[in-house]
Image 1 (cartoon, one colour):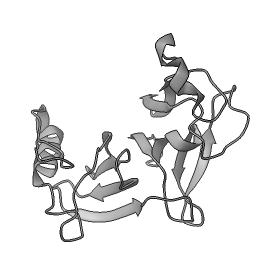
Image 2: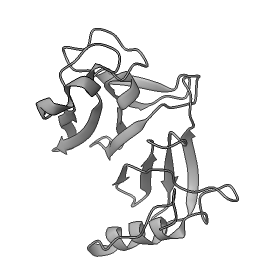
Image 3: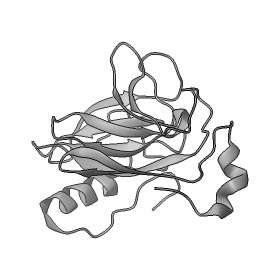
Length: 174
């Protein structure tokens, strides 16, 4: 795929076909002419089949919502830390209540979307002493069990600004 656009990859089932169709569209269907993915990190579905795409590690810093046929519905976020903006959303999932949960890498927490603020923190690792846009441990992965957040991954058990970078060799944590 061209730089900055997601490539379609084989996946099983109707969900996989819809995701491959969305990924293969590049600039089409994303709401703004000329808009495209820039280092997307994850895909999730809700009970209605709507598709959520975390497009967080490039310059977009957003989560897109599309219907089950891949048609654009809404964008959440955009780069920044002001209300309505996000900063590096990574892994995403839809929980048992139907709420979108995402790893907020920059703030080292699990979060959900919030209309009054950029996000609402749900959880942070016990070793993280404050929520700040400092990417302290490089939290990056999320897994649900029975519809609830159960596991997260991070590059390092670290509580200093960008401190995980010097500790990558330690192998990460779950």
